[in-house]
Image 1 (cartoon, helix red, strand yellow):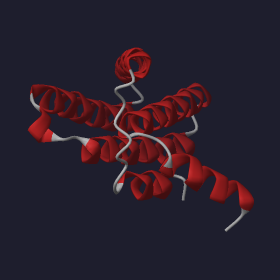
Image 2: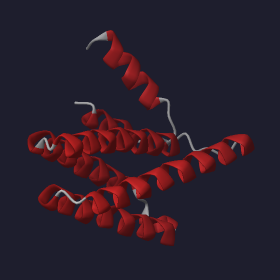
Image 3: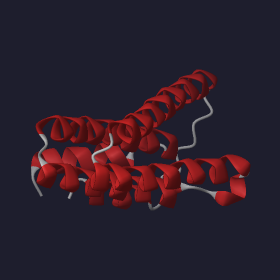
Image 4: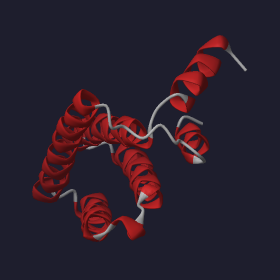
Length: 142
């Protein structure tokens, strides 16, 4: 294992579940930027590859959901499923409106999540139980 991978692994293992979700959201935003570049260049192969990666990221987010925690988990799942369906339309139809809809959704989710983390960190309430989450995150980094 290279030193960089080990550093990343250690960093991820030290994160709370909430912090891990933020890492995944930020990875999603990077992937959406790459999808946008692919759409602009009309690079169908790159677009398809990046959309596949985005769908994997959303699958990871869905796997993080704790449905016992209440309605928010179900609402987030609905948003994630919507994003998956919409990205599939982007892949088939090169629809800019659909792309912007998903991009706007993840910008809002990331911003809200950062605010929630900031608020929870100020109150000292972040849960540090990372259980099985690091291995799922590490799979994204291959």
